[in-house]
Every structure is written in C-alpha cells, then in structure tokens.
Length: 277
Image (cartoon, rainbow, N blue to C red; front, side):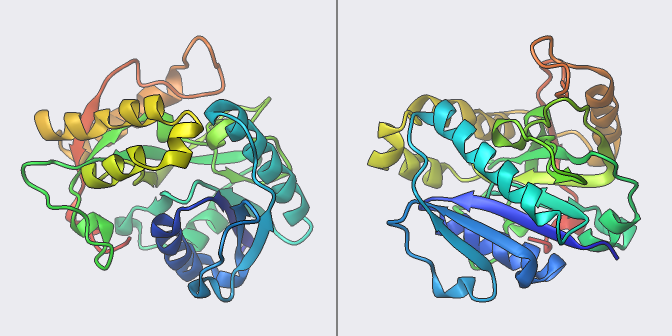
C-alpha cells in the first residue's frame, strides 16, 4: 500500500471539518491527516485529537488574493510531506474524494493501485438540494442519505491527488505546468452549497462579506436552483459522457483544466453512495 496523506485549510468551518476528518481518518488514518487553521484566533475542537493540527497566521486579502495565498502555503506543506509519503491529497474541507462502491475498494486501495505520475482527479459532483423534496441537512446523518441530486461539474474535477512536489492552482483546480487525469470510478463530491439554509447563514457572516464572498455565494447557489428545477439524468448514462467531454475539451483560458462545454447536467446520485459520507 502507498503511504498517503491528506491536507486541508479551514477557518470558521467546523461543520465541514468534522465530516472531513471522519471520512479521511477512516480511509487513511487520522495520523495521516494535516489540518491548518487559517488564523491564530481559531480554536481547535477536541474532536481533532489524533490529527496533525497547526494554527497559522490568517491569510489576508479578498477572495482571489487569499485563495492564492492559501494554495501557495498548502503546496509548500505538501512538498515537505513527500519526505514521508508517496501521495498527497489536497482538498477544501467541504470536498470528499470517493471511490465508486461498486469497485469494492477503499480510497487507499484505489490510489495504491492507480498509476499516478503527476496528478489524479475525481470527476466533479457538485451536490445540490431539491428544495421541494429534500429537508434541511441533518449533520448527524450521512450527507448523501439526504441529498440525491448533483451537477456533473468540471469546476470540481480538481487535481486533488499529487504524486510529487507540484504547485496547485487556487482551489486545487489545476496543477501548474501539468495536465490532469480523471480516474475512472473516482469522484470528488462537493458539499459546500448543498443546503439553502447554510448558504443564507454564510451570507450573514460579517467576516465573509468583508472578504468579498457575497458574489461568490450568489453564483454558487445556482446548483440548488438547477437541482430543484431540471430533470435529473441517469448516473450510469451521464457520468461516462461527462468524463469523456472533460477529458477531451479545455476552456480557452486554461488549457490544463477540464471543460463541460457550458452544459449543466443534473444527475440522481445512486443509492450505493448514500451511507458513505
């Protein structure tokens, strides 16, 4: 088995961090998780026990500038981890890298078998909420037992897994100077905008508004509108097509990122995923 680490950086995000630690801790071992708190004012929850936790000076600036600062910091930390590990996974705290249960492999088993020379990506699934069919999220229950719709999104097909010291682009969306490779049967589920109530709460967070998040949150709530209004495609039919499109096509402004050609494809998430996270 390959030696695999996972890292993330958070600020005022205990809701997602708890799920991130629970999932990746079970998959990789809590001793292989590295969590960096953005700000010396942050309090480390007691349920982080066993995880490598570091309090860091807050990365200052508006959304774009602070995102760049955070990813540069994490790229530096990942480079140092390669002294001990074969692979490093970098994600935001609201992103979970999942192997299709029908393959019968854990995340560590899947990545250990994969031939990764630079990067590996999971196909992006931006989980939404069907507001007329689904209740507010209950954090005590698995997320995917409560949310059954998502958008196949090239935005969340990220270069999350790296096999050597490399420089991530902001948000892990790409690796500088290298192409991306989408693993078959591997998915990155994004839960950042899967509950309308949580989006409204983020709008009310003064620190996020001060850092320029208002436009960002408005844009991201689009997935909920699409999941609530569009007919969902069958997963088994839509996923291979989306993977093919994202493998072939690139946006003109970034040739090392995938593209969905502006298509908004909504799918129903299969039942086999429901109790994973």
